[in-house]
Image (cartoon, helix red, strand yellow):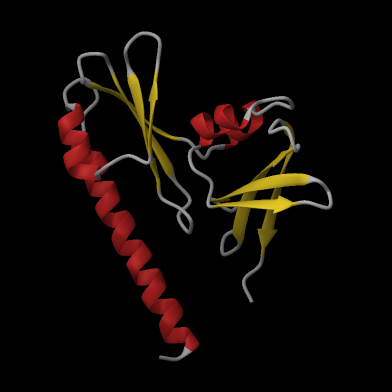
Length: 161
């Protein structure tokens, strides 16, 4: 298979996956759908984040190549309350220096990659995100000190080819 055919096949599988994802999400109704229905439609979450009030947020990242991470919150009775996309400009802006890695993970979901840079020293988590320029690839990064605290954020946009 030539490189163009491979790229086209990969794109088709991604579009197909997100098409199904969209159908499953559209079928879920806050205030009515149960946690069992969420799991039946979306599968096992990558993480479950409990809250003090007994509610739980279920994390459904669509990386490493996807640009969404869905956070679905169910109340203490197991009824869906909210469906939120975690990888948004608003959430990126909320991250502050000094945050712990768990706080970032809870806000944005599982990163597509985690890269240590021992000579710097730092670790960088990366998420693929929606580009500001059509056709570009975009990435959001959170930088951590050796003690696991946020030192800053950055973003990168790459033109294809």
